[in-house]
Length: 360
Ligand code: SAH
Ligand code: SF4
Image (cartoon, rainbow, N blue to C red; front, top):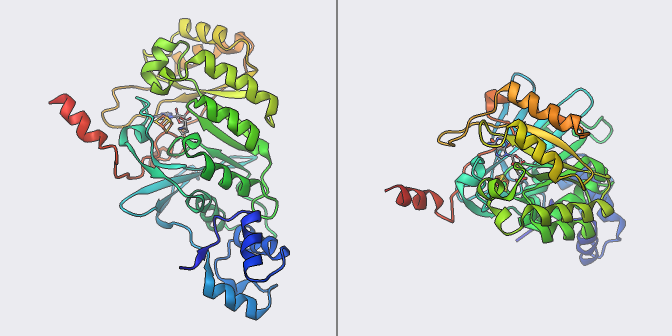
């Protein structure tokens, strides 16, 4: 078996080079070729001597998951569907904006956490993505968007907000994020890499210690009774514990606030009274809000809040002093909105069958 170099960080590449009797600086060269330039062919790595290139071609490879679909929406949003084997596919989405370009990256094939409004959660869980499958999404996107060594970077921000719960795949997600941050690879600043979590409290603390990046927390409800229903992991880590973890995280984080995501579900969590309750509950935590219009999917049982309800909800939060943005829906015509990243997952938890049995 040849070694796949795509998922190796600086330290591991140095070890790999040492194994070939090569100097550590080769690791940096490899990182630049693979990640800056998007090169997967060793013979094109022209600043290395030919015998070394030949040896690399024999014992190593650079392999990303295969792209099975590449679609672009009318608004420029672009989505790649990637094959990760055994019938599973994951998605990455690029969202171009005036001053930045954001790539939304997946961390798992499916998700085990069963949030009731999430199509990924509904599909069940198959497995954690490997480091090369996670970084492979950025690698493909960079390559397809035409980034060369000297050209501008179309991707200025990464959000770990695709399929899966990134903190449930901690080691691989952190290793992939280290590559995103590495100057020889993607060179993104910690403030421009955002991890979104449904609230795995111990892992939030670990992230603060091992790889602090910008943090988004999927709150979605102002009290435990409702959050227990929408985000079942709340039964294990209720709001009070979650907010305490956010406060600890801010001490170590590159930003001095956390972003609370709040999906707007009509008649469920979008009343003015709930907005007031929310404003009170998070009082101790420096934060911003991002209100997300619900993306409907078949049999979800939810509908999107109407624009007036969303505006009122936002106004209450703003009047209470919180910066509040409303996420625009993007890429609707290619199902590329966040939370809509369904891919195809072979459910190892057999959730569909269980549901059917419950109904019968
Ligand atoms: N598992 C992580 C990150 C992936 S989900 C998390 O839950 O935070 C990214 C964001 O999309 C989360 O805020 C999630 O709650 C939201 N989301 C999930 N399903 C959605 C839907 N149908 N419509 C709108 N947002 C959704
Ligand atoms: Fe998993 Fe996030 Fe979806 Fe919840 S919202 S099921 S944690 S991907």
